[in-house]
Image (cartoon, rainbow, N blue to C red):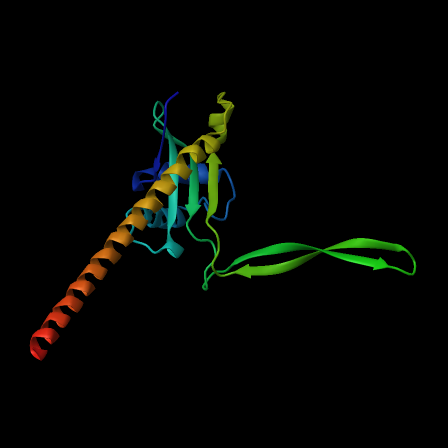
Length: 190
């Protein structure tokens, strides 16, 4: 069996929809319209056209022999913004102890929390059910993660280098303008 883990393309829409319909996931629903928007967002993210808070990187696992999408993984670059905060429960332990009675207990409490500058989230890890029945023992999503994470790190490194290069160009332009103003000022005063 030969597999290819790669970024999603618009040609994958029908296969990806069939795959997503086998499950009921919020971040990868079996709806063609929503998946089409996710594919578009993913392609823009890989191209570096979206800011971090809107970037989603969708990968698919293609069975090259069957020409079939058999798995997927999704990286949400930032899960938690001012518009849509990351919400979660924090588990707190409250110790209640009576010195007079010499007894006590620990009470666990859930506290609702929201994060507006959230973490990166991994989701959309799907394996085609019929494919696993065919006898593939390893989880394809696990294999996808082994490629997805290094690839994501590589993409982030490229984007960071691109930003640094752009910032350096702006800094160099500003330095040149400052030197030009200083030169003009010096000439004027002499």
